[in-house]
Image (cartoon, rainbow over all chains, first blue to last red; front, top):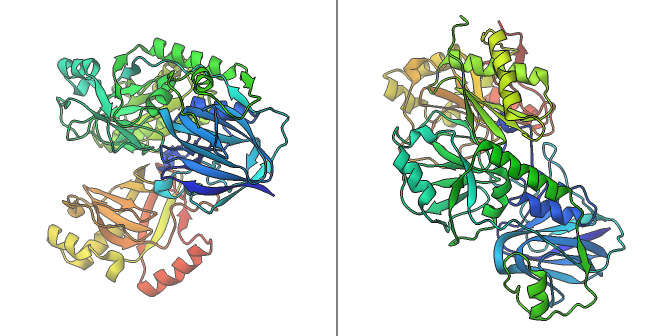
Length: 331
Length: 244
């Protein structure tokens, strides 16, 4: 049996597939990847189904050891990736011989990256999904040192390669106002759209806290609970907006000033605590057009550039790293 | 119920979720319209609808706008609204055994003091009412009920208490709630059921649908323990009856 042994795992490294859908009406959180495009890219690079279960790596980082020969793909933020200490591109297809170790640590940019395996992770589904929701103990537990993840490996004839990425350059995170924008006076909405925000330190898979000016709803902070969509920006009592992410609760009782559009949730997710951002209001038509563009990107063939060497100069890394233009750290 | 209801509001929660809002307060007539639309949309089984989430006052429709454009979804909802009488439709009445004694109902005395009643009166009122499943929320299987006798309306705790035992029945803010997994709560503990509102290996995994009716039947601690052991082994220990 092939597998991956977890040598070390920081907090918040979990297994995620496309999410646990169809049970929101029973109070069950969807979970799923924080950056769906990156998660799908890692899977697609190996010919897996785009929503197959993969390892989501947080800023806590992870170190894995191959049990048997495995082909993996990594896609997401500009993490520092090494195989037995030698640097690899942040987004790559990599072959591991038995006993070889892959280490991912936070690099130049980005908060999440994904490790997919050619074949599939052998896991027990919960309510039809392999996604971990740690707060409600649904799905596989968070990765921990010493754990073995069994893999039904599929042999691949792929060279070690860089995955070419074309992440959207998010100048601003686009939002649709509502559903409770009428709880806010015009100058409060202007304050929301005109201010620079910073991702707060207590951000996690459930919510990203926004630090900036305080927003004051005109009609109080409490509404009768209604549904909450991914990317909802709710404004609780202390006036600090919170963007609800993959692990959000299905319903909530605070007014929601706006909702991040689907195409920009991944870009927001990749912001780290302390990163600055702005919000920009768009129309429903513009949001759907952006969604269509994202779907087209997900349907386009994955471009791989074979890597013949396993030792990279910083110039190589600069060339491969198309997210931020910064180096991912030479070895 | 008359068909002179005001038309719902359509509010976007991003481009892939539509809130169909019938009101902004808790109101059984509003909730009936939510459930009627939920049932009608589920029966239609439209391509492009991912899932619907009923709440007290609105239905959130999660949809894929690349398959089902917003305008088409709104037109479908309007057509349903003009055809459906918003009469509460209950498919089932669930009778759940509940132990109110000792640590199972650790806050019965607090609730009684707040209401100016005896503990036995509190238990008689709670177990004598028929409830409607309004919605699930907060955590998997947490089932919010309308129909709590108004004598038992008690405000939430000022500060949350540590995690409750599994399958606890809670009251606060004029509602009752059947909980599943241990979580901290600001509500008061009135009793405990041996039944599982959520059991992952059971089919269906969730006992009651939003809109179903629910009653509590008092059992003593020994009966609770026996039923709890059976439920742990996978048995259903509640009764399902036809809705009246």
